Length: 259
Image (cartoon, rainbow, N blue to C red):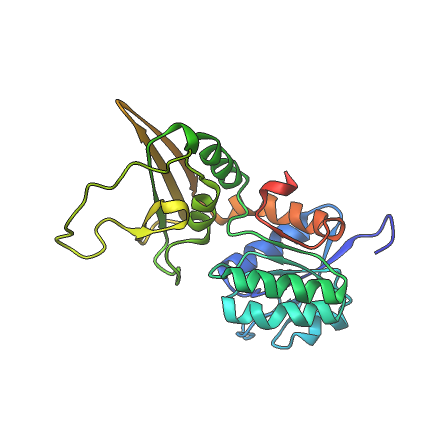
């Protein structure tokens, strides 16, 4: 891309709800140009005036600078090496990846001389929630996360909850011991996440994406809550990532470093 020209953007998973929201946001954003759409399901007609392809090669043929991916983990694992091979930067909103996946993405991107942004949540409020939780963690004795999403989300816990727990490092000595010795119902205490933070997942119709981080000490609690009521909440972060990924070296995990 030369100075003064638009960033050419493709969308992977264009026919899904998030994909369509990304298409609208990119088409409306100054300095971005929507040029290619790819999805497994292509019988929906044009989106923003662009036909949907089932072939990844559509991104290369459209000379994309950046591709935004909101699909499933297996599809993303196949996409990233393809983009790197064709010199295309990646903005990834899909979740469900392991540390090994992150390392594989780094290697692929480096081999292709391109960059990537991978964020479990593109809402700026979610990035701030994670930052505030990390700041608070050393001052409390106990901490748990309750995350809630729509009933079409396939993975649990959410990537946002995992990323938040990873950022919450307790003070020396760790969290206070859990007094629970017996669960009448298995899983009642949630899953044990990174840094020993327990995570509870809710999947329910009518919700989009919500999370509470609850921290406790003697005689007090602190609750840090973030709510996304509409997919539009993620779009400023997606646009920001599209604008910044070409100048942000390597794989950036999380939106926070871009803010």
